[in-house]
Image (cartoon, one colour):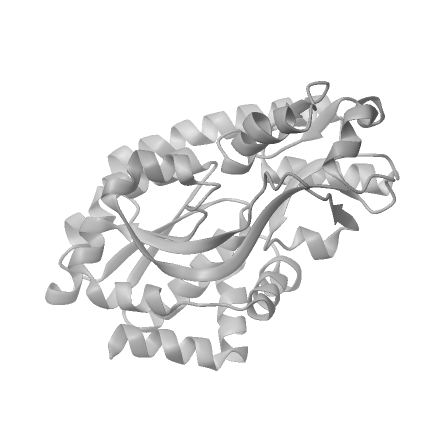
Length: 309
């Protein structure tokens, strides 16, 4: 894949898809939001709309788990996949999206929380110790971010990033680059999928590349990459939260109880992502989540009890 053409093509695709999705949110999703689901537990019309950024597997994997449990208990669940976090949080504010299974609200998504948080309820932490970072392939002789400053040319003066609206992108651009004097680098944004494609291309060719990455994320186990040391602690760790529209939460207390009960360990999430990404593959999150739940009956039982108890 030609790098320049690939990034530009994906940018155009993302922009067009974002417009289409926002139009759908405005015109077609209201019937799946609290307008109907707000009375779900009292009236029996159990509708829930979950949102996720396509390619962010902490969102898509956990969304699939919650969807499976809800559907197994009589709920009708719609999953809205978006290209970036901006329309996702806007959808949460308007209640076109009822629930986000994985919010990086403490740091990475803090700007969204400041902007939209008055309409969104923090239900609880499902994963502790998430982390953003810059990474290079393990064959690259760079161990820490400060070392990059004198080696910009080796990396074609490029940090390969993800979605332009991602909190990781904003932190890298506004904090990491100035903190470590990386002005000779340009942060090239596109999408998570495009970043991973470029990462694989460079690794296959044994060429240098520096990318924005995070954990928990399956790519850390699939690709031979090394997180660069961050002595100034620009990328501080944070916890991942499950959040819901406040109006939806008030009308659906049992769903909120289930969301609050949702907790995963490193081992559980690693197995879930492996099932979603490697065992079942693209667009088969539902099958992967159901198979994972059968292997993790304690999680299934905890969520079911909270939802129906």
